[in-house]
Length: 76
Image (cartoon, rainbow, N blue to C red; front, side):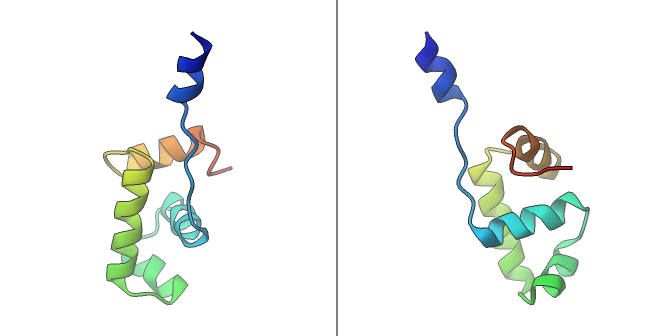
């Protein structure tokens, strides 16, 4: 049953930009603030947020941050 344990913990591949957005989300920044910091449009940040939620299988921002820590995508 060792294979089940390995497959239940999936490795998430995030782009450099997704990691930047995730990092800023973890600091509690709004979409507008992140867009301003990264010189992107609000719509682009919204798309990155949606992609992060899908890739991390999270239902909301709190779940996204929790899973990011579990997957070692974020560090304190």
